[in-house]
Length: 308
Image 1 (cartoon, rainbow, N blue to C red):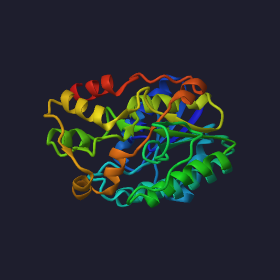
Image 2 (cartoon, rainbow, N blue to C red):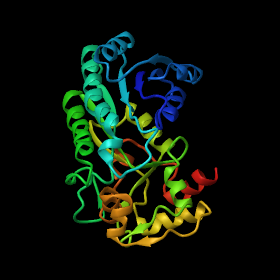
Image 3 (cartoon, rainbow, N blue to C red):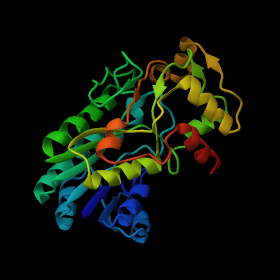
């Protein structure tokens, strides 16, 4: 199939393009950086230098290739250094999730592209009440501290794509780790600057970057329109995964601090994620996309990431 991938040199895109090529698809892949076009060409894709926020350029590029599938993987998080103010760190990514998504949907309509696959996120957007693990049918929660605009961007993607595209698929990825992902968390763990806050009861769902890409490859040809959680098989509380990450990273055990001190050191969003967050079930993606994560647990995944 002819597949148009935006954000093709990002965290997921760098694994997605080779995966699509290996599956026999014809891939047009975009990047904002001209110097990265050579990498895309070497992977077997036709590279296009494109700003996803330039509506006319997006529509022109999509019309030129007439793709059967569009995959939206655009983010702008390479320089993220803190989560104290989520909306500030996600300013451009939120634009890509709103204006960038709308641009791609307009292009898909103009080109007659029926299947549009987009990236979303699962974890802190989940409702922070009730059981520890949520499905796609559970409601999203209220915005966490400093995350109002970021949650609005996620909600926009998840509402607009299934409504506007005949075959709109939203992949809610768990927290990324693995090749290409930021090493900020590992660095903070090694410096003992990432503590367990107020007992660490928040539940996290993780997704290795190559597993994220393989889910998008699967969604090209499988899955009914709708939303899918893409995460590993083992949602886990901070009190379990954070000490384990410290162990495999060769660091001392993380400190334990009360909520008030965590809020002072890291901000309200981090405290909420570490104490109230809910995990996500991947059962729907496994059943309907025929997807199975290579790393079923963050335990084996963290070892591969940190030591590999």
